[in-house]
Amino acid sequence: MAIFHYLKYFLFHLVGLLAVAALLAGGGYVTIGLITIFSLYIIGDGICGDDASTPTFKHPAILTVQLWMALPLLMLIVFSFIWSVSTGDALGFGALVTQLTGYDVIAARDATAFGHHISGVIVTGLMIGMVGTITGHELTHRTWDPVSMFIGRWLLAFSFDTIFSIEHVYGHHRYVSTTEDPATAPRGRNVYFHILASTIKGNISAWNIEKKRLTRKRQGVFSWHNAVIRGHFMSVLLVVAAAGIGGVTAALFFIACALWGKSLLEIVNYMEHYGMVRNPDTTPVQPRHSWNTNKRISSWTMFNLTRHSHHHAQGEVPYQDLKPFPDAPMMISGYLTTIVVAMIPPLWHKLMTPKVLEWDRKYASEEERVLAAQANARSGIAELESATVADASSA
Image (cartoon, rainbow, N blue to C red):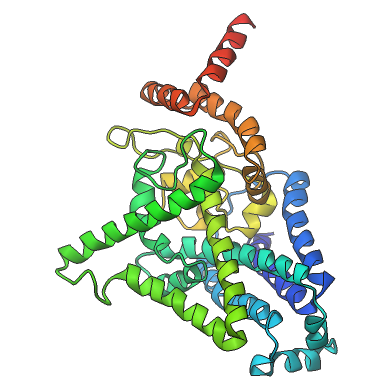
């Protein structure tokens, strides 16, 4: 069974290859692939339960190389999509795939309707978020490893978000669940507003962090030493590459995928810390300051990003060693299910407001209850809080 704990994380790569197969098959297969991936996560998490296992890995290098494999996989996924919306056959790719498989991918591509290309955008953006951002998140926490940092930043470049490697590691982990953190959504906030607000404030925060670093080292802010500038240039190179493969149309399709992938990150930020409160001056980050989930499929295919409570309590711990923390505050369900719910604001607030109020009662310290009451007043859920307390008293 020991080998199973290594193999389960390779489900991540199988999902990526499924996306490639759907994109190249063209036509309705693209939409079928999209539905299959969503079903895998939503239904899989619903019926497969939680994974609370905490195995010991004697060969962690395997799991690091596994993370590095995400970059060529994401390059293949994105190239396949760009090729699928192009008119030429860059690098003779279509001819090669047709020769190897016997399936005429060029004819299938040419017969693909625009609506299925939209499905392709959704699939590719989802893969940029999963294969790119999730793995990039894990790798850019390994600030001591230049190979992991290099691969991680290129993975993040696909979502125009290399600043994540700066703001997340040096800003978010310090100020999480406070008003100073761009990624922490206050109570009552709409997810679509959060995508914009967190993106803008996150970029400003990353710039300020990098500016302070360069000032300490006496290096120019507007220079190649600036990781923010270098990172955005990396993303520009990817857009240029997309244009080189398939022209302006392909570049625009890629930009749409990248922005969708970036939006997914901000939706995940939204649901990981929604409504949490903390005083950074008096209270260190603890497991209670993140929404957690141990759903099996999400955990196995997202490198235990689901075990977010432990990750924020100890950000330097590799993904395979994160503990499940079953007593931490729990999300609605697995990640993709919760993403879908978050994108429907009325449903989100209906399901999450009771969870937030429960957090106030069950997890918050005395100081945090005061902060929570203030947050409830600002968000307009104070009346519901009063009604909940009254119902509890009468019971």
